[in-house]
Image 1 (spheres, rainbow, N blue to C red):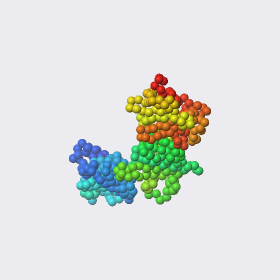
Image 2 (image 1 turned 90 degrees about the vertical axis):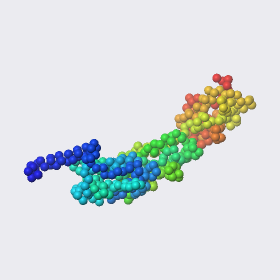
Image 3 (image 1 turned 180 degrees about the vertical axis):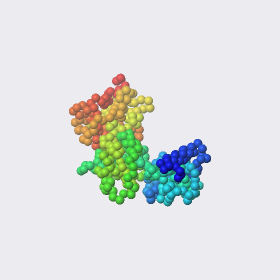
Image 4 (image 1 turned 180 degrees about the horizontal axis):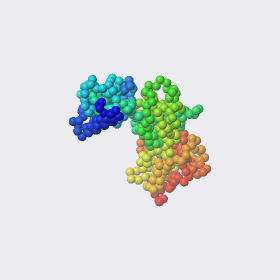
Length: 448
């Protein structure tokens, strides 16, 4: 090129690089111009080993899921894993040459990032070097000792990207229908928040800060929302000083106990959350108690993890479906029986105790109104005090199809609001306008 003016040389180099990239892009239509490096059965790959900057990550297929097993056990992101394997299977070079003939600037020495995959009948190892001027990347099949400039997707994923992105960012792996205990603890100055929820016989109960029947739907929604929560990224895989992240003494913990269906064992997942530190406005650092990796959390995640305890309390009087109710016994304020409603196959029957009468068909509209009130009316307020005896106006004993019984005490306050207690530590308060038929005589078939 000694006859080419000096100022034209950079332009010619750039033109040649562009032509080389153009030729590779044409390879999608004419595969004879490029070489597919591997024949990888993506669906059969069992292990993925990634080497980058002296760090090794190992991912293994376990059943239908993927897990990181090195440097520690951590669930993986199946979508990211599949994208990586597809990109590896489609990796091509424009012209394959022995590694010894490739230039040093290709960056394909032993320090280059690499990925090794294995499947039952074989394996493949790809080393990814520097970027190529034509918008390509230097790639090498180290098992066959060949390489060349090729497609850049693996460079984007392995060199520009971080292999830890193959991990799942979910805070909890098993939160959901198989969970049976939730513990939320947080320290705020001298105050301490503690919420304990437990499922017994398919129903949730609030244990702390007060004992109460819990709202199954509200807890199911909470567990589902928690299952979707993800952190904002790992910041340290091997922290030397947890105090830097406010995690030497976590400011809060969230524990969820669930059945691990794949193993058939019950295990607890514990999320630790740090206090105020350099995580940014409203943010916190967090980590799983069973893993060393520290990650960053945003305020939106924290607000989901720490709802008020009242959000879990069942605001209805009974907390059951109307079809579960087998009978309703009416009692006066002193607890003396005065009437009973009993469900039959096609009809509700009413028996008035004072008349010692035989059962008679009940007014079905009145019965439906009562069931609606008992099962769906929601309290507008909660009180920790029990109902004073001078406020009690009636009592109910509700028998369920399972044989269980629920005792309700019904009262009215000075404002005419309905007060309902079920034997727990809470009194549910309902507006004075609530239609609540409590007079047995109203349920006679003649009262239409």
